[in-house]
Amino acid sequence: MSQGDGQVGFPSLNATKPYWLKEPSPILLNHRTTPELPATADVVVVGSGITGAFASYFLKNSWAKEENVVMLEAREACSGATSRNGGHCQPQVYASVPAVAEFELQTFRFLQDLVKDNAIPCDWVSLTGVHAFLTQDLLDLAVVAVERLEKHHPALAEQVEVVCSSSGASLSPAQKERLAALRVPGVKGAIVQKSAASLWPYKLVAWVLEGLLESFACQGFNLQTNTPVTALHNQESGGEYPWLLKTHRGSIAAKKVLLATNGYTSNLLPEFRDLIVPVRGQVGALLPPSPSGAPVKMQHSYFIIANNPTSDSRDEYLVQRPLPGGELIFGGGRSKAGGLAIGEWRDDEIEESVARFLRGNLSPPLDLQPRTEEKWLPGLDDEEDEKSENAVERDELGASFEWTGVMGFSRDHHAWVGHVPESLGGGGRDGGLYICAGYSGHGMPTAALSARAVVEQMGGVVEGLGVGLPDELVLSEDRVRRTREGADTIQQQGEKGWATFFP
Picture: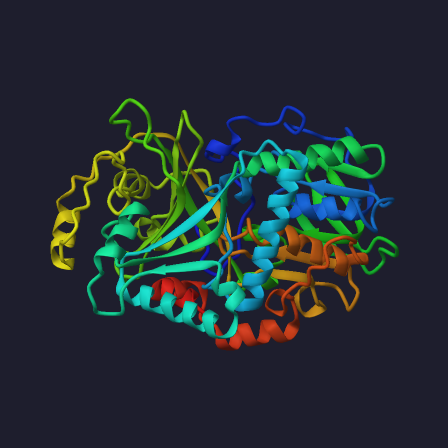
């Protein structure tokens, strides 16, 4: 059952199986570096997704190289949100405040370079992202945001291309041709982002964790899977180890604790139940149409956006796996989920209404026809375009995998990164509790360098990157106060739709 106030239960033991976990790492599967749980640790990292993995990576390659770092994972390694997402890594350049957009671009470039320099086998493909708008209101907001960038942040504006007419006007033949080339011929307009990628997210994290085990298993990195933390306590009598983490296998005392728990944060830190709320997403690996014997090949990643306060709202995202399989990883459809899936923290079930929507509502708006069979006809006006789109039969695609995952939606849309103050359960000014969570379904281009920033806060400078954390992401009591006083709840934001996500 969901809990609308954000308080969550424990990760499901019988979770749905995502596409990304079909080839698990034999090194990580059921891994426990030591048979028994250590009694103490210098740092305990709770969570083994992209945040926990990169936090441990930066810890063991900087000030904590000689420290004992223990990672506790409730299920198998990287079995939560990171292995259940849509396979995207794409900064929000125009739909974020500029400092956050720049930070996400830096994170994207860091990951891109890391994959290239180390030949990480995670199927990273750099491409462009097409944001297709089905309603004029959101398109108008997006255009205003881009115009603001062009005026005040031209370097960021160079990252995007706008393909649309002025509000209320008809698309020109050139604009129609461009949208057709992008495979979104029937939309109101599109924003194209230059920096985007598709990847196998589990394999990226597996590479990080396997490297840590190889380099530091005998020097203070200890991974304990299938070990959920059932309680977190600050001990007044703990002395050097003020934090006690309880599990069904025993307890471990720690000097410092990092909660890399995203949508499950309020399970251990209930003070955050209104700030980071679990929201369940659903994804399918759809079998692409193969009218000529080979799967149609997509050249971009896609976001499909519509802002209707009804069941017709759209919030889908798509990447294609490399050929020959070419599965279309298509996620979203929350408008078909009960209560917009807000407050849902269980990933052990599929909502069939969402699954049917995802299988049957990909084309249109996307054109999945081979390029030799163009269905867009030049010269049609907007009304005829709409009739043509509606006339296309919506054939339901098959799915090789269908799964759900739990996101952590932040009330002010930004991740929460840093030291937890006493008023929020942190145990004092230097109480040693930190979080890095609440990505609102957008962790891939944010989490890695957010993890680096929290590692710096925990102990010292991490050499080599020089990337500062934007103020918008820094956890502070003042930010909490401003959020609670000025921001709608996640439920209210869901009812208002996508417009709440534009700065």
